[in-house]
Length: 385
Image (tube, rainbow, N blue to C red; front, side, top):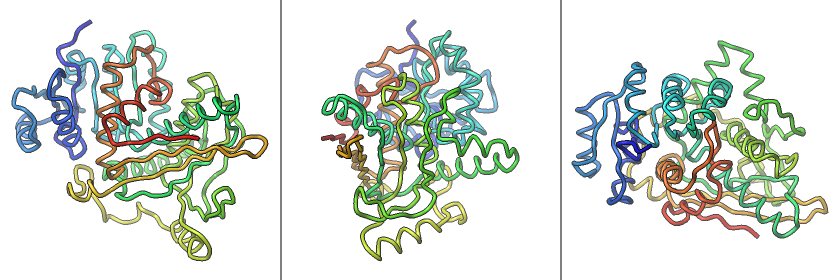
């Protein structure tokens, strides 16, 4: 069934939403029917002009507090991109509207408790309606989800079997996290304080794979020396969501990687300096301060352009043989790369992937198709061997 728009960017007047709109305008000037959506028509008009978006790109008013407006928006789009978070506060009605109307959906969610709630509530109905709901289409968790996919493809090709142990090590990351990411983390912690039962879910590596229980996974909560890479490593703040998405991808694909043991850590360096840096990083609480961007705020264009990331995936085979994969991005992770990943995820659903309805991960539904897009369009690299 043809819809009026291929893509609607909901939250286009927010900081990340603006970047998504700018990216679509620059990258797809022809052949894409898309619109910008948000609460205020006036603000959307201002953003459209400010970001250099053509004046014929339509504007749609919709409000998270008005489910009827969300449903009306979804009925007009093949894919909805939403940057309106924290999703546990503002996203539930939009997911429900997409499921009801069979509309594809992509977001930047890093909120596992809410994601599990949406899986339990909507997966079966999305399968019936054909709605493809895909969470975590930004820095959390595409580089990690597709990084493990890339590594395991290489392991299967080289050794005829998946790597049972995969270590993700963030070697470089310049640019930090978005204000929306920080707000989502704070909202998740507040929800857990109100409802202690959520703590069990948040600490379960397989929380997004209902009914599945895998092997014990490393907690990744304390600094350690990693002999695999001969360096000190420290806890990675995004590991609690990324690892759950990776295990859900394996679950949705039918466990092609077996009972994989997987963790994520940040590389801090060699020797005593590396150890000191790991210990200092482990003690930091990025949520304890009000410094940094708030939702809707972000770094300058120059800061975004100078950012980057480099992530190593080390696969250890049963005989001790090691195989590596590396994922890189050419902009800051929280804004520049994330906005490109989100936009290309929507285009992948629109143009490259049929797929059944349900609540998916990027790796399970889009996999190599999305990886190819990110290499061709979004300044990312995926290498293995």
